[in-house]
Image (tube, rainbow over all chains, first blue to last red):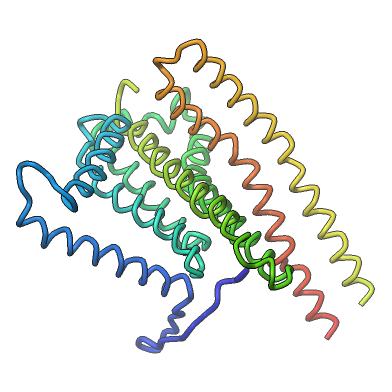
Length: 227
Length: 90
């Protein structure tokens, strides 16, 4: 489980495309999340004024995340909250998927860098949309001589963001793989549950929260004048 | 073959040195947590905002530790030098 396995190779117009374990596991998680979303959409028609049961659970989750996101990113950018809800759900469920023996997709740098790149794109786009010249001026902030340093500092943001999540998830994966490989069979019942609880559930939830809140902070830092 | 042994041995020492920055990371994180707890005890009504600020600070302090961990992992499991040496020998 240390390296990402290649499951099969697809040829599209003469170009090799590798379907790796990460992509397959992402598809499984996507299928689960899309199924959940479709069920929620179907049930949405029978939603009532006073929530009960399933509706209650969905409203609680959405409301808590919405309050958290809006309080972090500010009311003008609150329309970005759904995207970050999707990111939150994907990262959380991919961390939880390693309980079921799948290799967590976030333990592959490709996944986390894609998510961090989306944050970077949103950051630049929102900065240009809301502050225009003032945002570009932050790149040459005290003087234009500082442009290379500011550029490196800006480009380090998605790299650091993706490495943080990737390193945490990968370390959990490596420790659990070593535990399963090196211990005799009779201690592999029951005890790994604590390791999974610590590395997957606790660290996964914490790193998901940190990834989302730091992404929101970066975007607000770029888009908000007086922050 | 001897060269390969020396390279692998040095790689393990280098990985251990790369992981040593965890010492400083831990001290920094301990400082963040202790200050946060102190201010929480002084101002219990602000505990929620202090807690979220503490997690952000912990995450930023963790970055250098994660870099060290990744460098150690790359040196141990995906070291290009070892593969080059194996190709040279065979």
